[in-house]
Image (cartoon, rainbow, N blue to C red; front, side, top):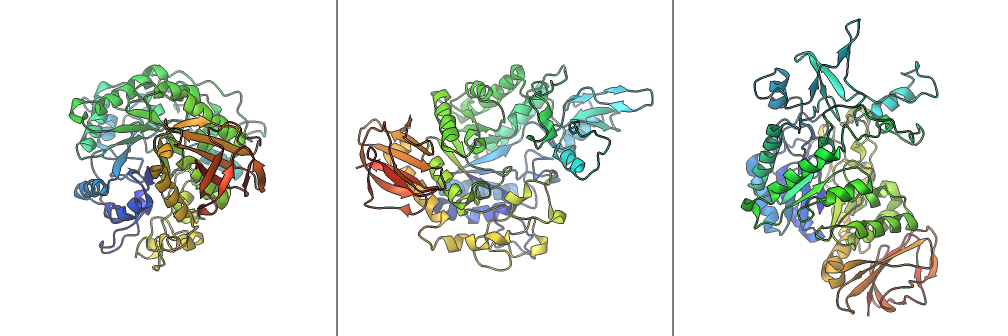
Length: 559
């Protein structure tokens, strides 16, 4: 599953004049590249009409295409072409909120009949001086600017021991004369999922895209649709420490403003029923649910309709980069997975610093091989296969309201074509985000020519994961080594000869003779190395020990 951020993926070559941002036709032109990479599904980040306050996640129409990205006809062409290339297409679905420019919000703020409670409104309370105060302590996820403001010395009324206050999730609206709730930016009012008409409207939007041929949805921030409409205060997180948490939002435990299970589970179940409708029973459709929650909460959500929906497995993305932490996370994840569920693995996305920036080049290659041989859906964020790093984006060119996520969203370098590495022929000053000059040497055209490039590694790993029966359909098997710095896991098919072992050295030092104590075979052959890519005639004895280079991951099959 390859995630495409459409604004910075590729601008189509025929668009005149070039506008400096991606397009749906640009994505269609790159389908041969994705097919050659081995991708068989793509997830398309928001492409809907939007004021673009939050990178397209502030939607003003759930049933159309942003005119600067293309048209509905372009979308239909993309779906058809993707299927012709044997690539399924998932789209982002944002159920929790809309843009404040959406017609629903405009009608709701004017109290038009039938739309009065499509959003979450409350009068709050008014003090003796006529000042309006919100109804509770619910906070906005986008509270990081508060921390930055304090660091700039703009909150000198706070004592040193006091926590930085988060931004309220409530915004006073003069038109309506009430507060509305926004879990994210003030321009993203939360839809009221306790209103059955809202739920039907959102499910109707799902059907609109399913009828156009999409194969499922990545559901954004799904845990936020579950709210306690009694609007009780959130409890304070007593484990919060200003030095440990970047976001003041984390001061609250959040069981009322989101994650409220009595309603959250009901609403997710309703969305799942859309995919199970008899109109779509002949199609293999899926929901992938984004929810940053505890493992027990995720397990409960995964049990709702495992045949069509599962939560993102962010455990590996968030775990410490060491053998012990990663093994605990992987073993637990596959133990708790529902029998009917499809597993998934994630190394990065548009909201997190790029993999190579977090782990370094060798670490990023190691993480890729670890994930690409695990069971289930393996997610690749566009540019991850090239080993791209975060860009330094000038302050005047930032798009993200938090000022954080633009470095991982810059354009893909395709070739040496001036001035924008094949992404667009527009003037560099007109690009939606600038090309990262530090990554120009990692362009697709260049990496195709090198036998050990990051792109070559991804292609080889994906191909082998499809070709080897144990990697294609084998179950996950816990394995153990005699080193606390080396991770091992296995994939086993029912036939004894269809087995493989993955060994990962998390150390920056060479590791000699690490032994796997419980594999089902002893003598094997290394078929892939994260450092050297494909290998031949490298026989290993798992009981005698395998030598690993620093940050090296190897895939070993039974001889």
